[in-house]
Length: 497
Ligand code: NAI
Ligand code: MG
Image 1 (tube, helix red, strand yellow):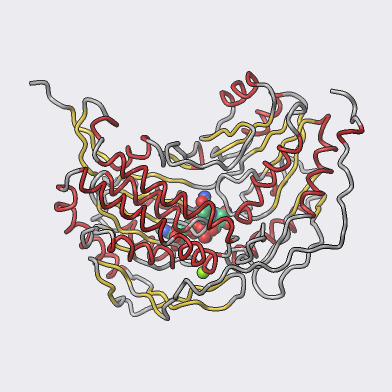
Image 2 (cartoon, rainbow, N blue to C red):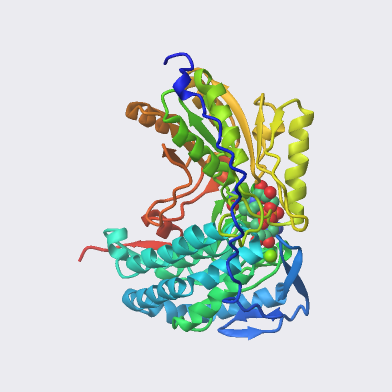
């Protein structure tokens, strides 16, 4: 590598004093009810708990709707409904189950704009992401697993498949509709019935999805939606009528669930936190790598379990890379999630903003050097500036703990071995990114990185055909791809006649 050749130096950004005009997406397509009941046995029912909670728009702090908070009685009712629907649904032919799932996928496409706007209002993510990523991928998952429903014999050659039974599925707030789709599509394709528990800050798209499932002809009771917070989730986990729990969320709650299920005949998959390394070698295409690193950590405000929250950059290019990265940060547009030009939207909740703020303060206190663009933030709503920390030590909290916000911690390395050691020095193991021109190095790195997904010269690419999941404290079990069917089937040997 030549020493910092001048042509690699970032050119000063042109400054014409121009700004993007506001480009807000209309919300007219969405109608939000004042109150949402529980969806049980194909009916909207009052919560027996008689309790309700409020879901809020994190970009405005305005309340959106009252949502039923399911208590243990309500969860019991939902599990009973799912149990009651199991014999009928699992007896449907794979072809008939596929038809329903295809219909769900097509309705999601037809109503994509409505779902995207609702997702953004309830959760704070930029409209361009809910529109271009969350909703199309949710539809793609239903399409993909619809395709498997009548081909399970090919997925598991020589075996006969049976559904596991009633699945309790608990999902987080960072990709509400997408996580519902990741969980529902394989479960339904394989003939299981479900009780779904959306996250308390983002229940609205899952409730709209319940409507779509019904419209698509899913029999009553096959999917039941119980809204509520941790207590509702805990009641679902504790219910003896559940055959399988699928959980995506924090490592802390995941460990708790695993302890709860110890000694019970309940299957479990956990998709938990991460602290992924995005590793940039000196021969990487630097500008592309800058874009990839920005996408890796500022996509969805960094509320991404596989976010590239640690940048490992090789020493010879570290200074150049950081210069370019900071310049790129200065151009990120932070603000109204409904604006089509917004890159970084609202932090999902006040509690999450407090957590990010606390960890950022710890980074400063422990001696790391902080950089933030001085962009204006909206006066109302929960927002956080994109943040980069340099001079980070492996022992710093910001290098070890999942921040789940738009905060990047930068470390440097000299050799590939050192990069691997540093990247693997975490209790997590969900994803990693490698940026280099050398194919053999990509393969060597992929072999040595302890991560469920390793992206090469890209980041945060998702596809329903590709399995996703973790190692170590990032959890176990895979979602997506043929592997994603496994948690939802019992396999019997076909006896030779
Ligand atoms: P959380 O793990 O509490 O929430 C995830 C889901 O689990 C929600 O639906 C919640 O209602 C439910 N839940 C909470 N307690 C439960 C319990 N005892 N039994 C069953 N279900 C329960 O995550 P939270 O508190 O919203 O976020 C805290 C941190 O967790 C974040 O700052 C982030 O670091 C991490 N997180 C990671 C996610 C991932 O995709 N890996 C998603 C959400 C949060
Ligand atoms: Mg909300």
